[in-house]
Image (cartoon, rainbow, N blue to C red; front, side, top):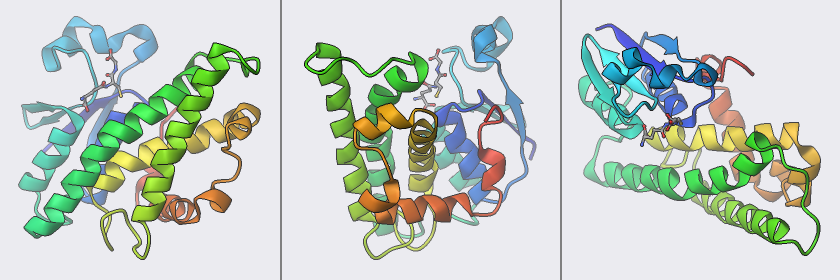
Length: 224
Ligand SMILES: N[C@@H](CCC(=O)N[C@@H](CS)C(=O)NCC(=O)O)C(=O)O
């Protein structure tokens, strides 16, 4: 089956699907859209996804949108290397964590990294409303990192000993955080994001473990 993924370089939801395809060892083509040129809002792309969002997957003419829906479809179509486990109990655990990451982790990352990486703000003055908002976003992010670090206690991956859909959803977010720490070290350090290995050692090891999985390098944003 010919699989073509439509995404934007670095878009975390498209990245999820790239990881899902990679974990399953599937061959695929990627059609990168230029967000700066609004290609995801072009009439051609709106015929693929009327919401003008990425990702969308074309599987021999069957077009699927919604990143987690695509992961679920991949798992039904291709049974090897399951993304959602093999037993009801495993599926429950993986769906739970996958949706928690989609909800809590995604919004924590967005609230923190939008001002830091997209708006490129300077560190706001102590006592200002902006400073309080940024510190609150940082603290909400720490809550999520602590949560994931605890989940990794005694296991290699978020839901056990094999990578799953939870990795596909969590990895892009944590990798984006690492990118922000590399690109804006001062502001991130002021918010307590200095060295992930010290504060979140299990999560740091997990990040390295997932990074080292076969084919993961090809999922990284092409503009990095
Ligand atoms: N729930 C959708 C959300 C898709 C989404 O918001 N994608 C972002 C990129 S990560 C996008 O296309 N943003 C551009 C826009 O909404 O105009 C999914 O998980 O696929």
